[in-house]
Image (cartoon, rainbow, N blue to C red):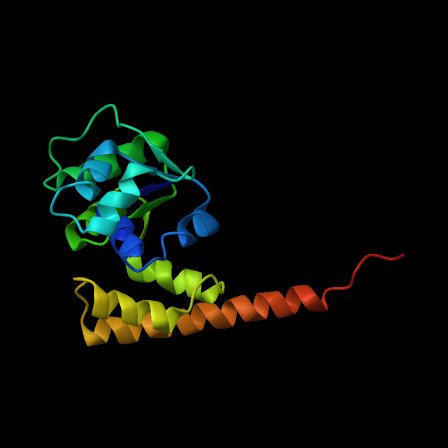
Length: 177
């Protein structure tokens, strides 16, 4: 699976100390240097800037060879979508509505910070409720109550699906001895 990240999911996951779920969910994650530059910007929160000083092994920084000049997005989003196209990525991690729509229009599956938290919670990689609380209370992440309720519903559905899958696997007969 090939996954390319924009700035905001990395930023928020770092701030709520949950960035560790990315390799557990996706394995390797790619990001263009424009994303790393945005994370390292002097106005970025100090924990985020510090994270960029020693990037994890699961993150590959790679430049796209060409960025579509018609993209009217921020530099990180435009570079992430361009890189996703070149790598024929399966997923683009992006929060901004305009960037999400453009990535979807180009045929990518899109996950934002909330979607990542939902999936990680369903797989017991983190506590969904606690992590969402931290996201909303401790960061500048903006989300409406309706979107949070919808996220909680999706999380519960994923959690139930995960539990049913695990139960089904446990019920399957083992090979003959």
